[in-house]
Amino acid sequence: MTNVRTRSKLAPFPFGPDGQTWEKALSDQGVHNGKADLVSAPFEDPRDVYKTGDPGLKYQDFELQISGFTDKQRNEALAALEKYLAEKHKHMLGYQFTQDMNGYQQDLGRFLANHTNNIGDPFVIKGGYQVNTRIAERAVLDYYAALWRATWPHDPDNLDSYWGYMLSMGSTEGNMYGVWNGRDYLSGKALFSEHDPKSSTAPLRWVQAAVPRGKPDTYYQPVVFYSEDAHYSFAKAVRILDVDTFSTLGERLYQGKCPLKGSQGKWPTEVPSRNGESGTSADGPGEIDVDALATLVEFFAAEGHPILVSLNYGSTFKGAHDDVRAVCDRLLPIFEKYDLIERDVLYMNDAKGNAKPEKRRGFWIHVDGALGAGYAPFQRMAFKDKDLGWTPDVDLPEFDFGLKAKSAKHGEIDMVCSMSLSGHKWPGAPWPCGIYMTKVKYQMKPPSQTQYIGSPDTTFAGSRNGFSPLVLWDHLARHSYKDQVKRIKEAQELTDYLEQQLKTLEKEGGLVLWTARTKGTLAVRFRRPSDETVAKWSLSTLTVKYPDQKSGGQIDRPYAHAFALPGASEKQIDELVADLRKDPVLTKPPALKPTTPRPIAQLAEGAVPIGLVHITGRGMQ
Image (cartoon, rainbow, N blue to C red):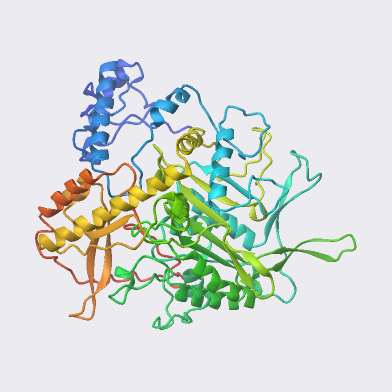
């Protein structure tokens, strides 16, 4: 007998702009039959549960009531939201989002009349689904391939040429795809056609390669390395993709054997970042500690593991750029020493039944260029070419597909395997978007040959936003390379202004601000102000563990930061500094609290910790 849930007592509170109770609204619409619920009722008043605190906005004005909205109600709600966003945009300095929308509304509003969907591979021209903007997507990808010194245009027969696509999310999707791509490549996965390899309808078999004779069981067990300044998406990616970090694998297989100095054998959760004057990474530049990375990588390479390293280029909080060149030069001898530059991967036998190995490298280097990969090529151009009219104070490190390093046995090696970019951070877009890029020789083939859309499903998402390629194309079409150099020049000069204004406030106003900036970045860090100031300016915040000279222990230092990206102005910075000058928290000496270690939960026998999941910081706050 079917169990039909009987109708519970409906909530008596008003709902939606009309203010009707849920029960009355159901009755008026003829939905309520008095016997059973066809829809569920709210168990509490959503206005009391959510308590948004958004000034000028009332949740009741946005509750989607059963009767729908009148034109007046709808327009009033949208007008209130427009006013709210305009006010927030006026005070937006705390996150890596470009606010300059480049006139997109005027150029591209006409395309909102149609649905566009870039489902499938951007380089498959033919296919059933043609309502797409892949022509613009390919042009954007070619543009960035040139900036990132990749071999272009994309040619599936040229293994060194690039392959990529525009993301539906930002770099989080690109980082996830990079870890997925690297995991499957390093773990010996492959797809083979059962019949004609040129057939678009032939089924594919997902194959795990055999471990070559004499090789350890760890041969196809990759290990992921990323720094303590990495974006929180990496912790998410390794959990979703079930990939081991050096920390989780170290605790499971090599407990007490961490080779880092001062570790006492205990594995850190992430690769340490460089130290600052305090002797810790709390006030460091935010760049990965190359020595620590090399030490950790060598330990796992010696155990036979393939290596997957992710580097930051424009980190989330400090805006720092990992020295990708220094990392590659340091790691390549390790890769060569442990035969990770070229390895046998065994899938098939030849006609005589003998093993027919393929060759793959045993390392993967991904660059999370969410912010930096958008502007750094132009800043690097300006540093090297005086004719561009600006010489930056800092030459940012090399980071892209053109980076090559020399090995003793294998000659020159291209080191970077994949990259990601967030388009909404730089150059700017009305919504999250981005780019993932790798090379054809590293590309994992699609999990299905999708006849439904007439294109192999090589991307992470299925349906993909067809509007984002138009947005980036429109920006790039509007700006020459010289224009782009001018854009980053103005952003760097505005960041200089922000830094100097904060230091002046610190000196003349007698405030303790801990003002800091890593050279060449667009971020300035300072002491966290009051909650009201944080909310007004949409400031990202982070509390770090700082050494306490008095007690010898640690204290909590709360920081905020601001970014001077296109769309920001000196006027905004002056207003922020004026607010900081009178902020009730900053006008008092910092009340530094000793860090209190939290007791670790007693795990059951056989249960083991498998990773650190950040719930604050890393751009979350």
